[in-house]
Length: 399
Image 1 (spheres, one colour):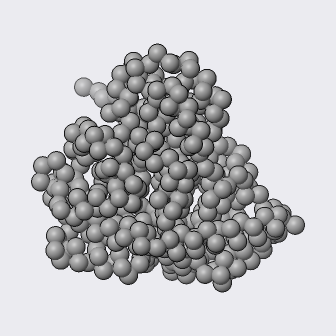
Image 2 (cartoon, rainbow, N blue to C red):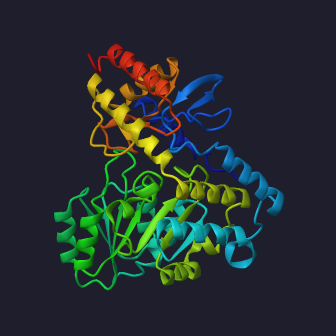
Image 3 (cartoon, rainbow, N blue to C red):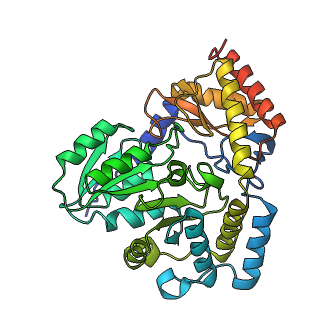
């Protein structure tokens, strides 16, 4: 019996990889040979790190390291179960109490990542076709995926456009449950959502509000409490989504808000019910980070001082830093091949700053996204500025 000729089932994979390489969009994933910090080692070369989310320099802070080591001695290396069966340890509950106090909310629920915190929330609030979700067109991929998990009506409003949001809320005024979702700080451009105006519109239309504050935690507000504190909106935002993976320097995510809302998600959220808990070491390190921020705002102040200096001097050099309002500093270059070349030449000069192109950002808006941190010294910033200036002149980006 003859067999049909074999087909190349993975030709599409090679074709797509070739296309990405040809378009300058193939992402070479670097590997750090040591701890996260202002200076790191990649491929055996020590380089200035200007693209991590380690805003406050806590990822290798001795206080967090000691807390993690102590937790391993006390609890072991893993929880061994999902939270709802046998995986909740008292250290998880301590973290949630401290997060709620820090965020000035009634309760908090910790999860394995900020990505999963969004997926835990949205599908359990927008439950059916009678409900409606309103989401900013530049919201993070984790929000987009969470919305796709719902059966609700979906409305994408123009970026930070309150007139468009108002029109869409009015259009869908008969929906049973309405949920407005926004990033707090938009991670690619560094601009801030007009959360004060979003909340007012939501209240006028009987909608719930949800903010993903991944890039606002540890950055905005008093001692880094985030965008809700920044705008003085305590008690008026229904779901605050945070991450422990950026400014807090560890890994994980959380949801904070009303106690009844957190209790509801504890019963319903699949990432909580069907995936193992955060490790004790991660939880203990996160507690140490929260304690540091509750005690002092010095690291947040240092972060902003560094960011303001860097942005001002980059603008003085002639670089386009877009619409940023935060320490996120996009260096706008346009096309992906130019951004990749710029990044490679920076690396040759001892600066690690990755290029970002489509689909992470729209076509024609490729960039180097610089992430300033509190751990950078004055000398570090000058080293980076000198490298950007040299490469910018070499490639004709600045004169």
